[in-house]
Each structure stands twice: as structure tokens, then as C-alpha cells.
Length: 506
View (tube, rainbow, N blue to C red):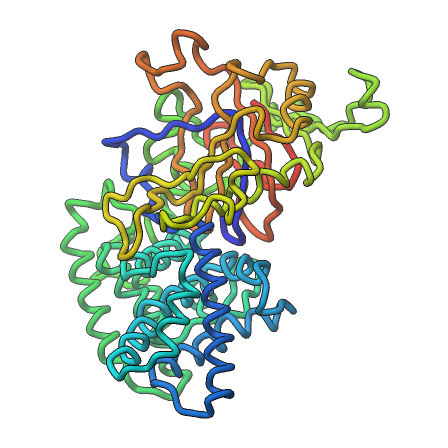
């Protein structure tokens, strides 16, 4: 997912294995910052900025340097972003828009971690009784982000860079594929991300960020590039040292040692070309190098469905199978015959999702004191979908441990027409115990699901004795996105695109 928070609804959930021993290409960077948490944080960010601006005017007094930097950074990032998109700064909608942009998210969490926290402590040390309590109150629904959270915002950007081949030279100016974000990065930010990538041994990603930082320093008329030159030298030495032992399994190496050729191609470029169109079988169809680089090819527009197969595929308006279709034709797109996969476009109106939509943000709760009613969970029949924290953030009882927000539902918690229409369209029994629990997933940019095969978890799976093996999967897209996203089938050579109200069945 590049642009936006992407929510899907499914009556089956994909399996993730603990103690994973898969090939490194299967393990995406950990991005535990869930979209819902960030929405609440963005709302608090907007309210804090508005409070500080009014406080300055009302009190007519100087505030701390750290808070001045906070206000300046908000104005440069989020405020400019709102103005460019004609969004007010007082609504939840504005907070949602911030979360859609990975650059805005990075800068927002950075403000909290590096400016606001220190400024609050500074006011407490001098006995200011106005600002700290107000900021704490505005942050009452969420735990304060930490340095770990800040690192995760950089991991999100680096995931996008690797997945879509994004250029930091464009990202620093807010260009994400075809979207102009109007939220930019300066030389300090670029250097920060480059150093972080280097610490993770993501050599191909790091080098381009260091070069972008150097260009930004030069454009600003600054000469402080000695640190960057030192880091580039360190990167070359470290890359070449690791080259012989780690090249075969590493994702972030160059084709040659950099000491021999600083313009060498990345292994991402090499392997995307070498593995293009290869369709392995069995576990290799969703594990290992071939599957990973096929996924990158497909999601970057290089689909490879054979011409002989394309000739058998079709898209039509279904009007004959049922009298209902004569009144409301269904646009059906057959994507594959073996296995059978079909996309039914815009078959569900958005109001079908209204009672469950709020849950995609609700899993962001990180304080046990937050009432369920305040998050509209009771209306949807939900319990708090947080996990006990293994490493709770300061002041928090719960911590989201996955990059996606996930909430489970029973039939009674959904719109009454939703499941009935799914059964009608697929001719598959879904209600009651005929399927797994219904799941809403909300994906953040830079946090793709790991490649997997939908199935029950093994011979000891709780549902196997009564339900048998999983036969089919249904995914409903609850939101539109501006760029990226969708569901890819690396072994079949195609992907579908996120389109609100559409249903993918295979």
C-alpha cells in the first residue's frame, strides 16, 4: 500500500506462522504502528498545534524553543499538506488524511519524540501549570510514541522504497509514484533515514538516501556534507565486507562490490529481471526468491499472465443467472480459471460497511481506561482488539503487535444484507459455522501482508475436525486508495486493485 489506509473485509483470515523460518524475502520489515493508533495520534497532533497557537496569542508570551520547533515543523509538514488538499485542521477527516501519507506520518511521530516530549518536560521543570496538563489531556486516548515508534515510521518509508523502487531524490520533495504529497523532507530527515537504513544493512536503500541528503545540503547552500562522505565510505566498506557471505540471501546488495563499481545495479533490479514470469509450484509459489521478485514485478506493473490464458479470460455484465441481475447487473471479471478467481466490481454499497468501519481504527486503543463506547465498539458487538503488551509503551496497557489493525466479527455484528449477498453471489454457504470468523484488516502504507496461502494452520487446527480444509476465500474492499495497494497472486502473474465495494473470490 503506497497511498492511504487500505481496509479489507474477509470471512477467512490468512495464516501467519510463529517461529518463522522462511527465506528472508518472505519477512518484511516489522511495522507495528497500526493505522488506528496513528489516526488518534494525528487528531491529538492537530489539537495540540491549535492549542499552542491560541496559547501564544492569548498569553502573548514566548514559549520554549522546542515548542517553537514543533509548531514550525507542523506548519511545514501537516499544515502545508492540509492547505494543498483543502482540508480543515479541526476534524477527524484531517487526521485520517495525515495517516494516508508516509512522509506526514514520519514527521508527525518525529515531532512527538524529538520536540514535544522534551518541551513538556521543560515546562514541568519551571513549574508551568498550563501547557503540560493540556497536552496530557489531548493525548488521553493514546500512549505517547517512543523512539521505537519513530523507527517504525522510517521502516515504513524504506519498505515502500524497496517494494516500488521509489527514488529518495523524489520522495524528499513529496513525490510518491504519481502522487504529489505536498509534504517534504529536508537534508536532516534524509540523512536520518539513510543512517537508519545503514544500521539495518539495507545498503541499496541507504546509499540513495545519503546521496539525496547531500543534494539537499548543496541546494540549501550548506557545506556540511563531511558526515555524509564518511557514511558513504563506511557503507562501501561494510557492503563489500558482507558481499561474499550474505549476497545470496540479502535483499539490499548491489550486483558488484562498490569498491569496484559505484554505479553497479541493485540485486533488486537484477533478480526482478531474471525471475520475471517464472511460476514455481508448491511452497515455492509463495516462498523464496522467485515468489518475492514476482510479487515486486506484479505490483510494479509487470504482470505476466500468458497470452494463451488471457484469451480465455473475460469481463462481462452478468444479467442472466438470476432475475436480480437483470435489475442490477454485476460486472464480473474472471481473472483465472485454475484456480478459479473472479472479481465482482462494486457489488456492495458503502453503507453496508458503516456499522463495522469504525473498528478498523478501534484496534488502536493502547490505554485500558478508554471506554468501548467512546470508540463505537459496542454498536458493532466488538471486544477490544488489542493484545497484551510484551513491551508496553510508557503509560499503556495494550500494544498493537501487527502492522494491520484486525477485528473479528460474528454474523450478528454485520449489516444483515452483507453475508446474504456474499452467499448469493458465490453460491457458497458462509453463515454460522460454515466459515471462519469475519475479519476486518486495515493496512498501512509500507506494511504489506506476508506472502501466504490461505489454508487452515495444520492437522491440529481447531476447525479442521468440524469444517475440513478451507475451500475458498472472499475479500471485500472497504476503501478506495489513490495509489498502490490491492491483492497480488505472484504465481499466477496478476493482481487486483483496491476498489471500495468490490469483492474478490477465489
